[in-house]
Image (cartoon, rainbow, N blue to C red; front, side, top):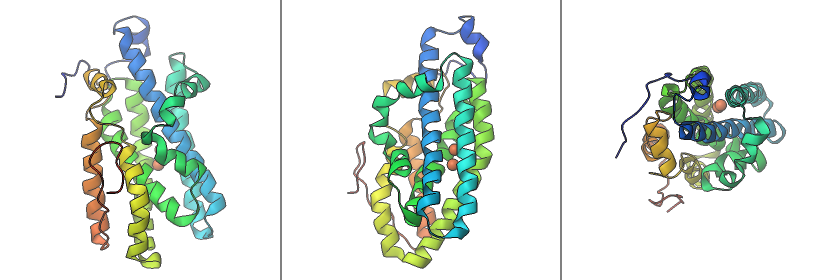
Length: 252
Ligand SMILES: [Fe+2]
Ligand SMILES: [Fe+2]
C-alpha cells in the first residue's frame, strides 16, 4: 500500500532541515537516497570513461566522451546537494560500501569495472541510462527536497539524449551482430538492469514515499522499464529473455 505523502514537490530545502521543521529521520533517508544516486552517476561516468579504452569504433568516441562529461556533472550536482547538508563525497561513498555489493549495483559496477567493447556499452546504456531516465523523471523530479528536484530537472534533459543513444546502438547491434547475439547479451544484462531499480516494497522505499522523496515503488518502475524495452526490442524483432519473478531477478 502506498503511504500518504507528507510533503509536496520541492517543498523543503536545507534550511528546513536545519530549523528542525522536519523530523530528523527525513534527513537520514534523504542522505541515503542522495548517496545512492550520486554513486550511480559516478559509476556510470567511470563506465563511459572505461569505454573510451575498450570500444574500438572511433565514430562512437565523441558521444562516449560527451556522456562521460555529462555523467560526471550529474554526480557533481548530487554530491553538491549532499555537501550543502554537511555530507562530504567521501563520507557519502563510505556509507555505500555494503549497498555497492548488492544486486542493485551490479549494473553500474560492471560497467565501471568490467565492461568490454561495443555490446557491453550498448547494454550498459540500456541498463543505466534508460533506467535512470525513469528513476529521475518519475521519482526524483518530483522530490519534496527542492535541491534534488532541481538537479533531476537538469540531469533529465541529458539523460533523454543518452537514452536515444542507447536506442540507436540497439538498432546498430541488431544489424551488425544479428538478433541471436543481441538476445544473448540481453540474457546477461537484463537481470542487472531490472535489479538496478532495487528490491520491491522495502521499509526504505516506504519512508521515501511517505516523505515525498520518491513517487513510485521500485517494482512499478521496473515494470515500466520492461514494458518500454519490450516494445523497443520488439520493433527490431528481438524478444526479451524471461526473468525469474523474485528480486534479485535472474534469467529464467
Ligand atoms: Fe546520469
Ligand atoms: Fe546517462
